[in-house]
Image 1 (cartoon, chains in turn orange, purple):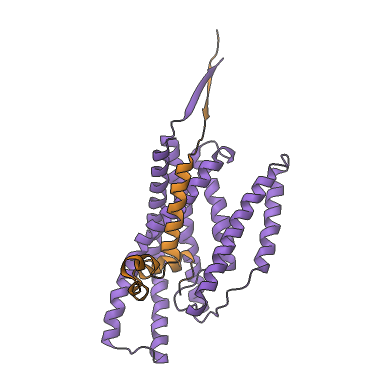
Image 2: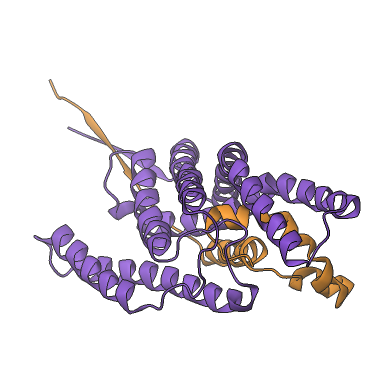
Length: 71
Length: 242
């Protein structure tokens, strides 16, 4: 009588495309929450965005709470 | 795992963990932020920069509501961002992480990343509430903070890679090497140039809450991504042998 055992072998392959997409998400998200001082909206609203600071104000509390220098 | 599925579960894990982080902050950090902003307002009135008027308070309430409501949304954005980094590192290092399932492996990695790219930099450049920090030095502080995070994270990767050359004393060598390296960097890096002008008990309590909030993110991302990876990974081969 033979005894069968089974093992599960897991292989991990990570595509370069996935790494590229995630690296872009990482950099963009970090910039928006941690460092934007009107830069993102200035692409649409011009210089006024540096005065309005909408994203800065929106992320203000998280910026302090997560340890990023804010102002 | 298929590329699209991998990206989706990584981003979902990050966003969900970020939602938890934002919610925890909303509950435990916001009271300290309100207190610090109250002091900041008093300083503005005393210095004559602002008048304690109805106009001021209407304007203040307007942007303060925006700031508070942004706590959770910013948590989701930051969580998605950090989750993306976590997903990349997890995918690349999963086979060499200790643990007999993906949740344990992801929690181990979350612990390592929490320690190297959050706690160590935090000990050098701790979080500060509003009213602490000179706007003139913000660029310098950002550069110092980011540099320390990058040095600590890259240092950890280098010592991990080096540890492969010392199979028998793998953990010992990498840990001691990283410990010495980061201690030297810790003392070489310049101090935060700003003086702390707020009451120290407020600053210290704020910092403790900040650590708890960020820690909630790292615990959550480990559990969520580990669970989803386990659930959706289809690239497993089952081998029967006798």
